[in-house]
Image (cartoon, rainbow, N blue to C red; front, side, top):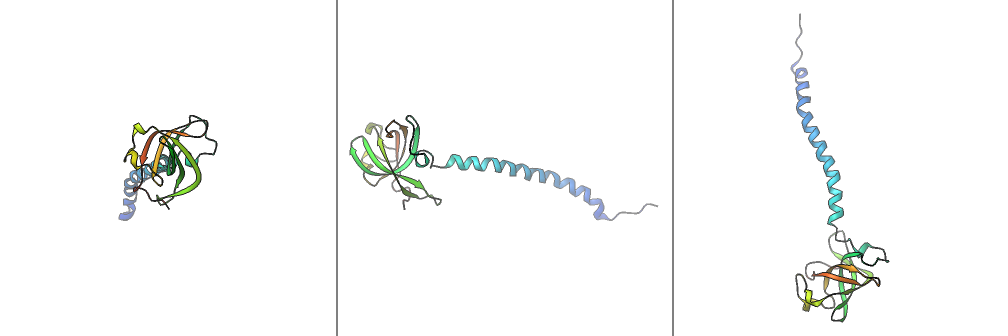
Length: 149
C-alpha cells in the first residue's frame, strides 16, 4: 500500500525550480554591477589630467583640470592654482601652479572673456608643451557653479 507524502514535501521540488531562474538573474545582475560600477567611477571623475599627474608632465600630453585664476600677466596668458575635487563634490586649492596660454578669439564656454579675472574658477582642456605650459583648446567658466573651500 502506498503512503501519501505530506503536501509540503511534494511542493519542495516545484519551489526549488521556480526560484532557480530568480537566483540566476540576481547572480547575473551582481556580476554586471561588479563590472560596470568601477568603470563608471573611473570614467566620471573630473580629477583626471594634471591634478593627479606627476610633476613631470610630458610635452604634448592631454590635460584637463580645474583651476582658480591668480593672475593674467598678458592678454593670452593665465596663471592659476590647481584645484582638487573633494569627496563631497566641492574643490580645494592645491599647492600646484599652472600657466595657461589661450586664444581670446576662441571664447569662453558658459561665459565671456571679460569673466576671466583673478579669482575666477575655470576648467581647461588642452595640450602641454615642454615648459609645462598648457595650450588651451577649451576654457569653461565654472565660477558660481562649483564650491571652493
